[in-house]
Length: 196
Image (cartoon, rainbow, N blue to C red; front, side, top):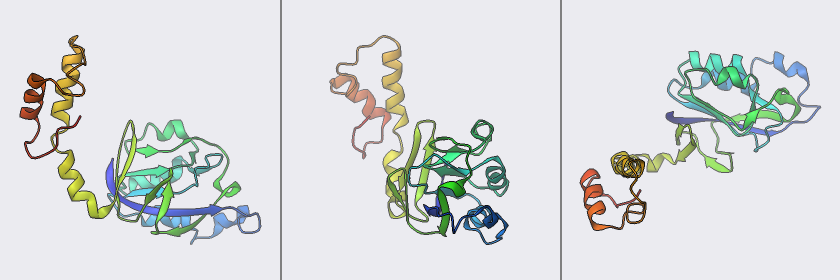
């Protein structure tokens, strides 16, 4: 998953502000976020690291996918988590959770800086996600970061192949042995630091 962040901020829910009837409000930020998230963006929702209530379910995630979003990220829970996990669009959440978001979360503001998983996420910041998790790159550092990461796979693949073939890691990882450093340098771009 790669795409710019489209953020949604939550605040703690209050019974007087979040009765079940708020679902009738066509301007409810949770639904507006789904319908206005631009194609290719990642919808990011701040749940204050509280996954006891869902921040989305299969209906909202399906709609987001149909609109062409690059993914969805929440530090809260998802209802229908197993089904969402089968979707082609990447979806990251803290854990499955059945209760409606109204029990804990009030969706409040769109396109504002938020915290998700304890990390600051600004609108337009770049989110990169894979099976290991999600990284957030500030928009003004995106080009520099992309350049830095070019060529990282080849040296890592070399080391993994060697280890997979029985090579000891001493002198290979980290790469301190001259013969290994030469091979890794030939695989990496010359102008980037040698790291694995």
